[in-house]
Image (cartoon, rainbow, N blue to C red):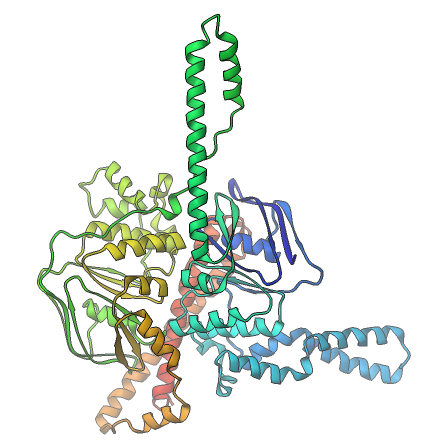
Length: 629
């Protein structure tokens, strides 16, 4: 066994997070940790890695165990290049090499000094363990496998996209060759192609894997065991997520059956006691029954809140047949063409998924279709009778309480009606009085869905709705969308949701869009299509039509203006990130589980937004770099 947890417990103040957690990690284990948001998954991982000390119980490790930890909010050194970050994986060996040079000089003067010889042997062992003299070959091999071409070696980390940074972090971990690879939400904000790559890589990994994830396809593709974190402890299941579901269902059914039987038996005993205790002839038997009742332990009713949320998106009036029509639609951002001559006709009751790599303009296109941003050219028309609701990727943190967010918009609802409605989205008890400004990303998403249910739209625009949701809420949302009879336009990287809806997909890439009949057709296309060579990209660039001097001046001004805007926004977000990272390290935050979770969610959102701006800045540089000189 590599890692053993024995009756581990952890509290933050009066709040109990983990209790009696007992489990093991063996060689070749692929463990997926699942659970509702806020149940302590990241806390459990931090205890396993030793960055957090449990209040009780112990964690033991096999001799000389090594692990690599891909943290949810980890950051690379943005001042380094890709190659420098990879060399950092050899930091112990590089330091040993420097020591070896000094030791060799000292040994030349004192060749028989036992202390120097011992230090020399120790330094040599460190270098040999990492095969550091062949590090350049190893780095090149791993970078190539992680889809980093040689020309990316000198690329600064700060211009990498979110997916590229994840691949770079994983590449570093691979060079470190840990016995256990620990990943916290590794699929967050990764595009379709990067997800496919990540799964392929992990399938061939030689060590054990421990991952926190809400991505059902990822869990099905990678893991062979499930740890479900529920009510402060974990239950272990064999197999991937699809294998876990029937096991969980059976366990819940057995527990519910035992609970009902215990309650029925207790009721029967109590009835006998009530009827016979006062009778002289049956007093002793009644007292015996009462003792049985006092000693009896009622099996706890199974916890169901996490995976049985039931809500439906409904509308009052159906629109006319043509719900959304575009003609020759062209959309750009920062001088980069995202969509060209898009003709789209979405009819009543139809569904369409918009997919594609990060930075291809999916969210921008959705804003244009919703009328929140003007296109470069072409037209967008919503049909008569359309009632539109939108879900944005980044939810706004407004003032007031959760209950006020609904009550202020619908003042005729009673308090009971508002609380009953919020309970459908798992806001129960004191949760309804939380300040909206303190909600986590998942809670903000659930609150927005509570609003949308009351808006009763017949046209839904959803931009990455599953990003911050736990796996149970994702299941509930998937069922609600599948049952929705209105018109749906959805931007998502969630492959399970994409496939389960069984609708056409508009795949955006390199300024154009291609329609596919469904997920299987898209999968067949992306698995066969090879990336364009650098020569082909240069050839396409050279074939672009020549512009007039007036057009060149206008474009140069637009590019420079947008570049300055991006740089200012990136710098501002960078300052916010540094401030939040410093705040996370404060003792009063580290000891408050809820505040720590909320701040980590906010930090993740900010980093992701900064990565999006980096993506746009890089594309601007590649496409119009000469205008910025």
